[in-house]
Image (tube, rainbow, N blue to C red; front, side, top):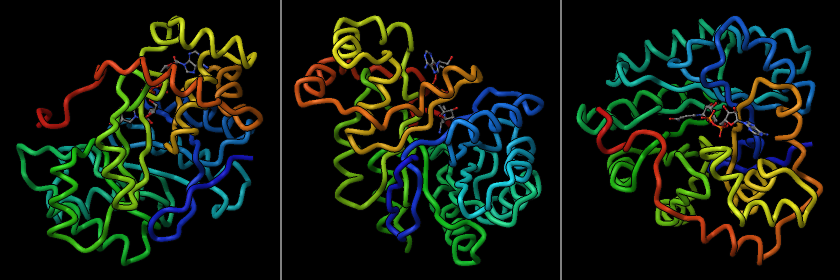
Length: 273
Ligand code: NAD
């Protein structure tokens, strides 16, 4: 139901996954179950979210073949460094109770620690050992990516960054495209009501008979981004995957381009850590 993108090592990743940030471990199994029922096959968690255990339980309880599912988790900021990163990955796999993850990401570059190159070499080892099918980064800016490209072997498959119509990240997306890195959007719905209420989004939503959230998510897909919207509400979980029977036209895309404000809702990756 959900089309796949081909990563730079030929692994296929669904263009749309289910984000589980801020879903408590005790509730996440049910939420992921609802998402699987609605047709999602990818889940995006992280050590930070403290719900890897519930995500792994949902994967095992789903009855779906493991190879049809795509599980992403991330290394937290306190675990930078080669050996620490290897141990952090072991802990994530143990929490998930899985033999491998599909994608392992460095959550933030933490330039103040200046250890992301070392950390990346640990991820290269995890990849070589077959314990992650692909490796990537999150919240990396162009200079951080340039260093990885210059000093290490494996090009990140994905950079997961804050991205929505109020922060369109044109320069970073151009860099990704040039180097075969998939752009994945976190906080894809931006500020929600604030964005949904804009005249541009309202007009496009009316034109296609869709909700504002669907218009924004469809915009991401038209731009070539992978998306990982989050909700715990079954109706919204279903709404957020019901995107594959309509398209935006060039006029819609041009309208949404005007919403760019360079407005970050989350931390600035250059300043965090
Ligand atoms: P989001 O854009 O997915 O959702 C924001 C809010 O919008 C949700 O809390 C929900 O209340 C609301 N919403 C969801 N569907 C809706 C709908 N159909 N209609 C109206 N409102 C709706 O934001 P997010 O959860 O911050 O980001 C998505 C995922 O990205 C996270 O769950 C997490 O997996 C990932 N993430 C990664 C990072 C990172 O640093 N790598 C940071 C934040 C989030």
